[in-house]
Image 1 (cartoon, rainbow, N blue to C red):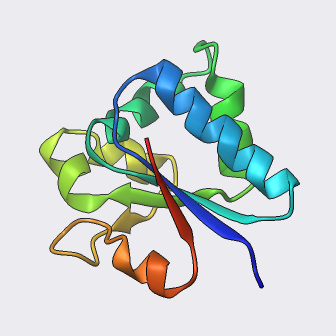
Image 2: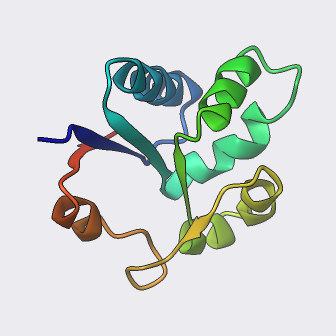
Length: 116
């Protein structure tokens, strides 16, 4: 059985988001297929963590470099003014559920869903 996990990050709190990134990397290192989906306030963290001077910039870049970001919510990033930063950082805008990334497709694909 393939081991797959998707971490949905909703909170706009950097300290919480750092744990999402660390866990995604840890799952990957343990042999899981891991993905991170940014929803809600978490989409605003892309602009913050993409700045080289931010202490967690390296972790953000490592997560991106490992291809762990599935993408960011199209509707939320638009509503919260973070869509441009998400696109600039190469994140796919996800909108398969009325403009938002749906969890159902991940369930159907055998992922365990974790919500932060």
